[in-house]
Structures are given as structure tokens and as C-alpha cells.
Amino acid sequence: MTLDYDSVIAYRTAWIPVRYDARDVILYALGVGYGRDDLDFLLESRGPKVLPTLATTLVESISRDLGLDMTRVVHAAQRIDILHPLPAVGDIVWQAAVVDVIDKGLEKGAIVIFDTTARRTEEGPDLFVLRNTLMARGDGGCGGDRAASPERLSVPDRDADMRNVIQTHPDQALLYRMNGDMNPLHVDPEMAERAGFPQPILHGLCTYGIACRSIVETVCAGDPTRIRRFEGRFTEPVYPGDAITTEIWDEGAEVRFRCFVSDRNVTVFDDGYCLLSTTGEN
Image 1: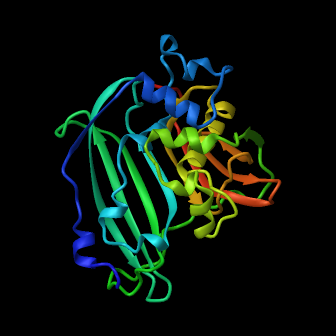
Image 2: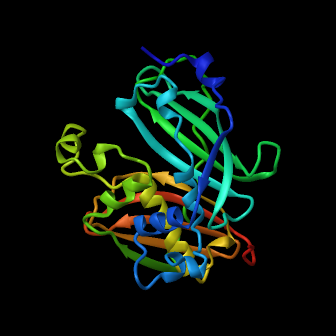
Image 3: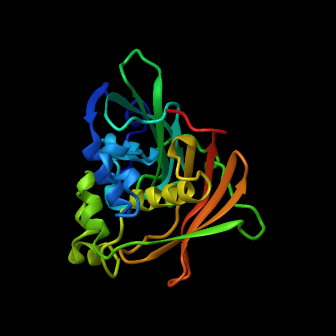
């Protein structure tokens, strides 16, 4: 049974309030691997600084509300647009809405894209907009738009300008899940085996945060408020304990990147694109 196209394309939540504080910011920073040498991101007396990808943990995914065959859904891509840098403490409201369903055919599945918009108040200006792209392999033939897949932002065909390596910890998924994604796939060996993995995999959004951390460390001189857009495609799973190498092409305001695990010779996050402001904003 495929998804109900008419109900999915019309899906929109109410505005949902969320309060977060420095403890949430610090927990997220720990989840993407910051430690005792990174106190600007971990100590409230120093801010703490906020990675923009924290936004992915402040809202809830609507994927399970759309009637998709969740056993065959893959998180394909993620984007965030930051209109105003997130403070360390705040009250926001968010609303999610489906923006497109691309029908690839009965055998190929459907691409479902939804946006989540956050503001300080319902009538206020946007703070950030998240775009989630799902590949719903069991929901092709739903009658949606047959347009081409979203355009890829491939990395340049030349050697990277720099590389940054972040070593994940074998227990990283156990900590990252405290940000809200309690899917046992990331901690339970039996669940991972049933899903076809040799061991539990790291959360994709943890990889996303680690990639953002790499850009902040290498290109932004430690200033996360410079990031205005951050996006890319998930291509292979990361296992806790993997070392994630981010290759970076610095093109001024536009940064291209991709992440790979050299020990397994796999690219885990590709077509990375980051838009920067000239200077950060508070």
C-alpha cells in the first residue's frame, strides 16, 4: 500500500512551542564529540557557543505521521537555513509542512520533502528553516509529481584545500540519543542485525553535526554564527568508533565538503555545501 498523496502533500502541523537552555546546548555539543579542550561549547559561563545544527534536535520529525512504509524509509539529505544565530537559551515555536512528493515509480519509491520553520513567536520572523529529504522506497506509484530528483551540489573536481579528522567514540550513539532520537537501531545489536547492519550505526544527524563542527573548526575560526546554510546527502552509515575525515574546498563565502571513513573507504556524507557570512552575528 502506497502513501496517500493528497493527504501527505497537504500535511502541516500546528505551531508547537519548545523551550531549551544551556544544558541542551551542552548535551548536543557532547553528542557530536566536543570535550575538555572545547569549553567554549561546553561551559555556560562562556556562552556556551551554539552549533547551528542543534536546531535538528529542537524539533520533531514528522516522517512517522505521513503514513510511509517506515521499514523502507531512508534519510537522504538534510539542509538548514539560519536566518538568525541561535542563542544558548530560548523559547521558540515550530511548524512542519510537506513541500513536495516526487514519485519515482512503483519500483523506485518516492522522495518526500518537508520543511520545519522555527520562530520566536508565530507572527515573528523566521529563525531557521530545516529541510528534510526522505527516500521512501516502499511508496512509489503514489501519483505525486514525476519531476527529476533534487539537484546535486557536487564537490569540485580538484584536490581539497584542507582536511579535518574527528574521531568518534565507541559509545557516541549512547550519548547522542539523549538529544531525543531514541531509535534502538543506534544502540541495540539485535535491532541493527535485523536491519542488515553488523552493529548499531551512528545517528545520521550526529554525522551531520560532526560535519558542521569540522567546518566551524577549520573555516570559521571557531565561530559558528558565520554559518547561514548547511546541507548535504547521507550516503553510507557511520559506526561509533569510526574516524570521520572531512574534505573541505574553501571558496570564500561558499564552502564545499564531503565526509568519509578512510578505514572502510566509504563516503558517508556527500555534496556538502555551506554558505557563510563575512563575519558572525550575535
